Image 1: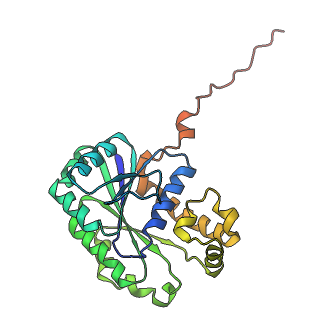
Image 2: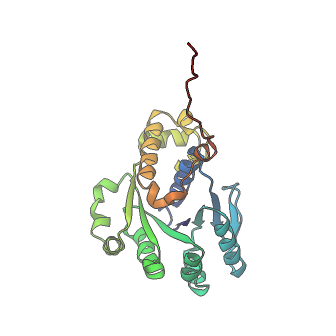
Image 3: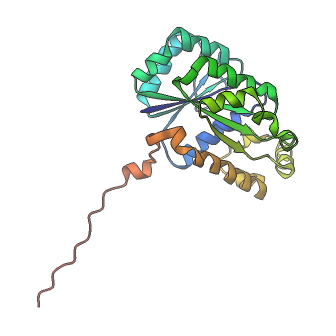
Length: 249
């Protein structure tokens, strides 16, 4: 089965960009081929290697064509485009088309401790129902520990329990990391676009990145399935077993 991974949440600051870049960084580090698509009305220079599709009728045809041609497709639904994409999903009956194409869908929903960020979860459940897999990506903020029960006691959490959603909890960017970002006039999502961010942002960042990658690793099979095939493994030549030469007496 091909994998289509949709990352979405229209709530500002839910951590969508961070999650998208962590998933892509993980795939790239393991040399796993994938394509990256952004559903948005305007093209941006922020993601220079992305294929941008305007949410229109032709975009759906383009999307299905690209998904059909690739084993793993990561799609970021830009802020404000969630409802638009949902309508297209239902109008063009993607819930029938994609499974017929042999495509399995995972919806990744980034949330914070802010209850308003949970709205996207219940909305997604209403739209996609049990036709997809769900993954909740908790993005820890500095206030998260003070309100750790916000998600667990929410209606969204109960809904995701019914759908047996997988949950990941990404660690907080601490004060040392925030200071390093300010010194470099950047932020957490932008730091993940750097080739070697550990060398730029220091030891605490290295620990954060290692822990975050560990979270992705824990959900690797769920997210990518058997399509997680590093190029090094695919292209490695088959070695023949050595045989000892016979020595004549």
